[in-house]
Length: 82
Image 1: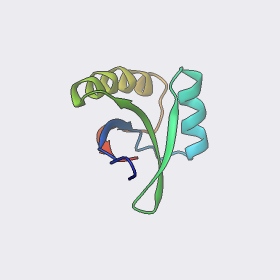
Image 2: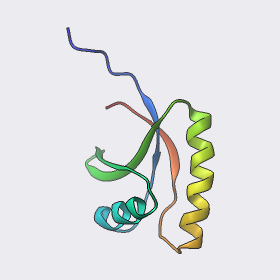
Image 3: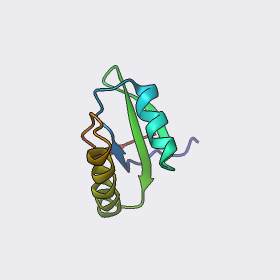
Image 4: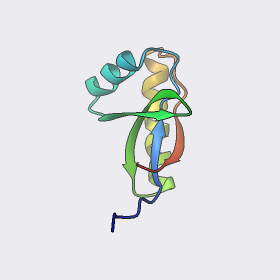
């Protein structure tokens, strides 16, 4: 039988920029972006994190970097099944 997929915690970038631009920006800052299809739209995720709390902690750090760099993104914590 196939392994059962369980939802995991990720940070979704919610960027108004191209997926390639968001991914490059994240890679330059040592994040490993994952491109997924959410409701027919490509989204950039970072993670998974072991808990919602860990993901939220990292989201706060990431939000500061986003703000400092004047990026058009609003990172949020989401559950996603891979």
